[in-house]
Length: 217
Image 1 (cartoon, rainbow, N blue to C red):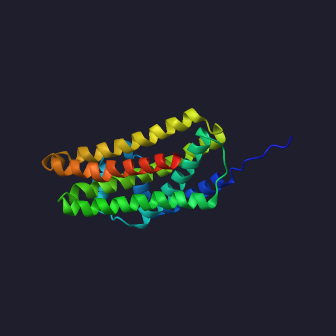
Image 2 (image 1 turned 45 degrees about the horizontal axis):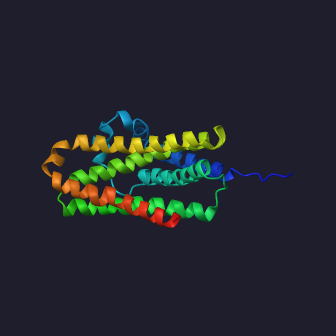
Image 3 (image 1 turned 180 degrees about the horizontal axis):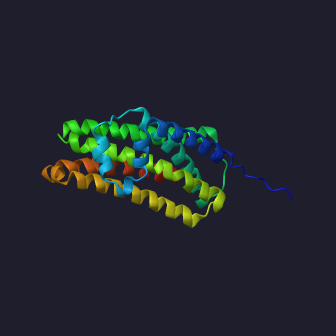
């Protein structure tokens, strides 16, 4: 009896592409790249690099590209771990990548606009920088996670779920660090900040969840 062999070439290609992207980003700004890797225990990262932050720059663009690639691969890993092992299809991978990157860029743009409207530009611009930096860090972290789940544990479901929890925890830590830095300013505009949280942080995920649930039904 001949069994179908599922190829992992897609994960290998995405990993090689990500490593090349990281090498280029590191060569652009070695110190910032090194500080990014210590972002969870270095709250000064946001204070130091916020002044030179732009919504679009080569360093963050490369790292965001890396995040999109590895997050798309991670979606495949989670699907393979929970449902069935499938090969990466280029068209589906591009669609997932496009959705993730456009979602982040659109959300960041709306946050900046909301900052002007709600007179919270300083806080929301820092949150945008924090979120992009956190995504960039997660993008680097997902490389060994994806390799471990695919080649080390053969899509272990328990480890896949733990990986999801870890990613969510890192996102929450990043948000907490930004709020702590701007605690006084946020407390002075607490109503506007709550409005922001409901519309641009919680709202999009509720919409995405409803769309996924309707699709599954």
